[in-house]
Amino acid sequence: MTTLVTGAGMVGRHTAQLLCERGEAVVIADVRPQAELNFETMHGIAYECCDITDCARLARIVAANDVRRIVHTAALLSTAIRKDPVRGVTVNTVGTVAVLEAARLNGVGRVVLASSTTVGYTTFGNRGSGPIEEDFPYRIVSQRPASIYAASKIAAEHLGLLYTDLYQLDVVILRYAAVLSAGLEPPSSVPARLLARLLDGGRESCDVILDDPYLSWAGGEEFVDVRDCARANLHALDATAPLQRVYNVATGRSYSLDEFVEVVRLIYPKLRVDRALKVATGFAGFPYIRPAPSDVGAATRELGFHAIYSLEDTIRYCTETH
Image 1 (tube, rainbow, N blue to C red):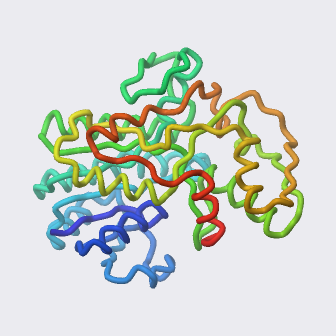
Image 2 (image 1 turned 45 degrees about the vertical axis):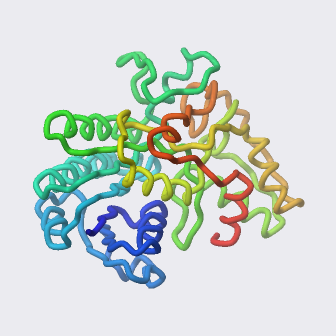
């Protein structure tokens, strides 16, 4: 039995590595040629170069490798989508349909879709202080998505659930909090860019000027270790009764920007940060301040998953790989 992981980004790589370590056959599919990916460390994992929007090619990969399960992490993130919206929407929506259709046509047992807690950020202005559940109230016009990325993730979630409703495809959706990681490639996500800037400043003992409004926030924000995302993917693959279908993957705790900086300062005590901008918006420029962390109870009950890495654990790990 082979598991296909789409996307050779940090979540995809960590997921593939965990699967390989427990003795499973794994294939990673990514649009980039293998030579560009520093892939030599991924021992025992097969590689297929494939544009995720190429339905026919993807279906052939699934059939040829006897793929029985899929973890779909391939996506363009907010920064890349702002530069090329058409490509971003195509990858994140058409690409998801291509994965679902390849799974349907080939009798794949389960598909795990990577989503994001940003799908609910525009509801923050009308919420109380309780944890944010997966099935949150949502006004489709006044609380519409505040980014193309979030809109594409909402679309992908609904497509996945529809494939369950219409074709009985076994789909599980995971909404990651802001993912923190570091690696060989330049950081592209907002949380990875923030962390890279702080780690560079701490390591080089130079002032860090936070003059990008996307890297500052008012109130709190929740973060999750890339290794916990990979663990959650495996729990979602293995769960026997994922009845809710959609789950938050987070720690259950949020941090202000000052608190986040203080955790980095535990590692680099001389870190100096100049908050050049005083913002009144939430994380990554979203209009509302987060009122509470996400509810992580359903993932514990139905997937047997809970995050094990604290923010300090994560940042220490990233200092080793940055």
